[in-house]
Image (cartoon, rainbow, N blue to C red; front, side, top):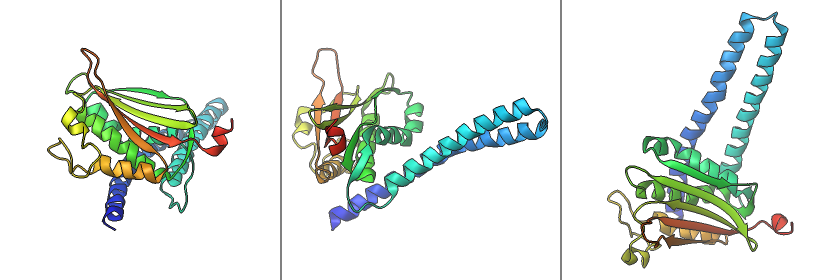
Length: 235
């Protein structure tokens, strides 16, 4: 019961951040539509301009529809796992933390070619990816920070990797990394990776990590591995 309560609390926190990011994304096309309406009113008899404005407005409405559809699909209550695009989930997780990444002047590198689907509880997987991104943002250096996000398929599995160029996980910490209440952060509770591991396993997946050991290199990669959706696996 305590674990379920914690998961609900974490989901609400992610949903709150996601709501703010979605509102920011919605505001942009709404501002564009407002401007298009104004311009059209200024020259209602200029057929060419009116048609051009309507085409742009149509594209902005399509963007709003896409945002609404994606948001509803992630947070609609699921009673069973369904096929979701991991690339879309990764993009949404990045959107949640885009403002923080901009404030920290972090370079975001993406290798996301989709759709790549897995049968999952989408809101829970969004929570896991969001947590991995938060850890990466906490780990990168104060200047020259780089966060890389990659989705690929291999042998019937979908692998979503989050990599940072921070100082990496110490050997001592690596032994207890996925245990509850283990953290090196002054502001952390040590539950994020433990909970993420539990969610991954619930979705028939796993989380692993790799510490960069090459000379002159630092950083850590966390990899979320999930079974590819049956339909995709047959292709």
